[in-house]
Image (cartoon, rainbow, N blue to C red; front, side, top):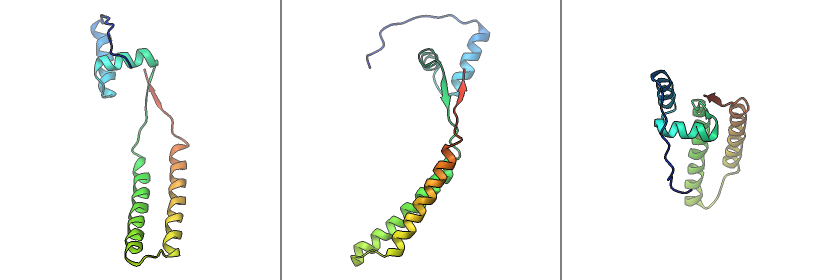
Length: 111
């Protein structure tokens, strides 16, 4: 992307600027970035990601189990079938959690 070289000056009344300022703070953006993004893209979408905790916990559980399996493999040179089945079952659970989390996900459009 090229460096921005075109500069435009715009004027707001106090109420307009208060709205733009409030919205940019809500989006955790600088005012100029907010104005440029909303002007070019037409909208800014925000996703609430608090539900990702379940996904994180499921992935962490799988990672811990894989580390334990790797430790056993490195020390014994073999893998236990039960360990692999447990990891595969956890992967299935993670897939279900992801599908449950992603299917209703809708962006909140802020204008």
